[in-house]
Structure formats: structure tokens, C-alpha cells
Amino acid sequence: MIKDEKSQTCLPRIRSHYTQFSQKEKMIADFIIANPEKIIHSTISGIAEDLGIADATVFRFCKRMGFKGYQAMKISLASDLVTPIKDIHESIHEQDSEGVIAQKVFRSNIRTLEDSLGILNEETFTRAVQAMLIAGRVEFYGTGGSGFVAMDAHHKFLRTGMTTAAYNDPHMQLLSASQLTNEDVIVFISHSGANKDLLEVLDVAKKNQINTIAVTHFAKTPLSKLVDIPLYTLSQETDYRSEALASRISQLSIVDALYVNIMMKRKDQSKASLQKMRDAISIKRI
View 1 (spheres, rainbow, N blue to C red):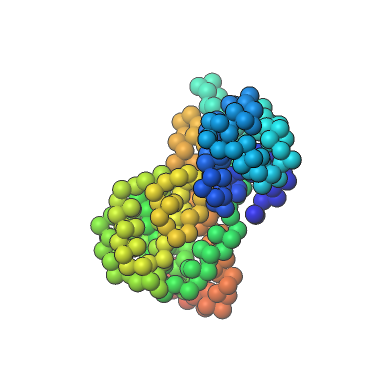
View 2 (cartoon, rainbow, N blue to C red):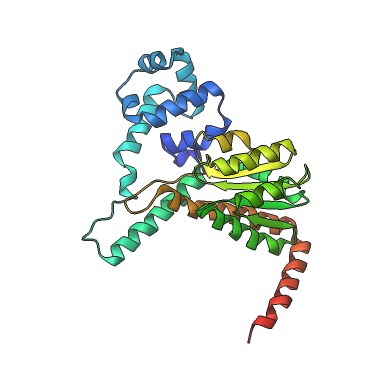
């Protein structure tokens, strides 16, 4: 894990391990995330009964999370609720000054980045970097706000010297995906992970055996289940600020992290590509 789990309380720790869980472990994790207050006031037998599993299965889950047992996990979970997300994601009030509102927006962005870093799986991220490194062509697909993130990714990756493109129109995505092969990579960017148009494109990608990566919200979504390599973001909704808006910050950061890794591993090609670009745009400067 990228983040030191010793510094994490219960919920962040569960989220950071989630992609490595078995199906039964994911069932327990989903129940804890959805019902934290119920967990605090329940016994291990009560939780096991609700889930239809053995007490020992719940106990092993607690141990895997680094806790001595169920009681230790409950204490850690309680600290998540005592210091609620609202402390950071403060509600915006009509009487707030412009400066206070700005502070709250910045705090929300900071928390989004911290939460997303906490669930970033290093092994999965490395797989994404390696897949992109050997790709003949890398294309970025997104619609709506995620479409702008896809364009930003294309703008960055042009500097690597790799063959890249970005499309935010569903028809263009379908047409382009139909021409790609198993030597190429498509990076799908979608906060909801349930965009019908993108899922149709993903179906074409699967038929063509194209390698697929997703940058999507931490959840059980069709997109995250079907792509080869899912990369997750985590964000909270606040007043006047949708969850999808907050997630854009972490989407851009994941793209940046991929870009910097690629640039470092393609050092010579990247330097040559950057110099060509600088020479080309120099005519635009006075």
C-alpha cells in the first residue's frame, strides 16, 4: 500500500485494501462501510448473523485489517465517526464570506486527494504504467466533465512522444475503438462508472481484446468490474459542490501520476519529444 496503514483508522484502512479482498471479505467490507454506526453497537455474532457467515470469518477479517480483534476494530471505527467528514467537508452557509467559502473548497479538495491516495493500490497502479509503456497507442475516453480530464490527459501525454488521442464524443469513441488492437490501451475516465455510452465502447474494446484502464469512483460499478485495470478516486459531496465535481481533482492527479511515471521511464524519448514541441511552439512567442 502507498499510504502507511498504521496511520489509518478503520474505514480508510478497509478502502485501501478493498481491491485485494476475496468476495466474502468484500461483503463484510461493504457492510461496514454502509453501516458503521450499527457495527459499533453490535456484537461480532450479530454481524455474522446479519451476513449469514461464521463469527470466525468476521474475526479473520478484523485480523487481516491489522486489528487484534472485533473490539479493536470497533474502537477504530468509532474514531472515524467521532471526527466526521463534515469537519473537513464543512457545509457552506449563506453568511460565509468569500474567503471562508474559498477555504472550505480548498479543504474539500485536499481531503479528496488524501482519500484517493489512501485507496491507491501500488501494484494496480504499476500495472497501469506498464500497460501504457508497451502500448502502440493510448487513447483517453470520457464524457461531460470527465471528457475534459481526458483531453487534459491527451495534452500531457503528447509530450511523452507516445501516440495518443482523446475523444469525448460517444460516436467517435466507438469508431476509434473499432480500429484499435490488443497492442493498444484505452483509458476510460468516468466518475459514476455507469455511463451507458462508455460501457458500449468498453464492449467494443473487449471484443477487440484492447487493454483497458479505468479512472473511476471507488465503488462497485459496471466499469470498474469490466476493465482490466481499475484506478479509483474517492470524494465526498458537499453543499453547492457535487461529488463528481470534487472527483475531478483526483482524476487529474491520477493522470498526472501516470504521466510523470511514463516520462521518467521514457527519459530519452521524452526529452527528444519535449524539445521538438518547444521548437514548434517557439514561433508563437514574441
